[in-house]
Image 1 (cartoon, rainbow, N blue to C red):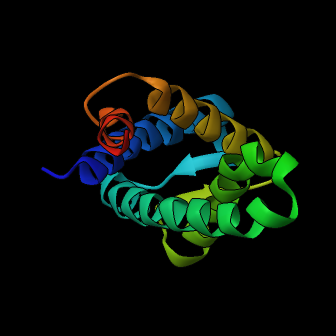
Image 2: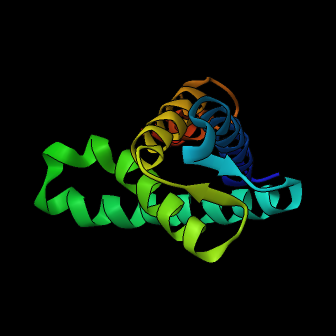
Length: 130
């Protein structure tokens, strides 16, 4: 399995945990509407999150390099916004936008920080380039 796919699947798992946790903690401000709707929303959110992370990073890299660490937070919010607009699996209201974004973002950062085989490609490429 390609490493980028393994990393995306791991990220999808982290996003699933983050969305479920946000739904449990935030109640009616962040609700999950059924298992099928959740799975559809999760896949849409995962794809949009990866795309927006790349897009926001490219947009901020040259112009505002000091805010590049916030790329994940911005892309998480954008992915949640578009997912809510395109699918029926999530409903977010009021403060659920703020807290839900933070919960999903923090959980995805924790998941991405885990060591594993999806991380070794950078080290291997650096060794090959020397």
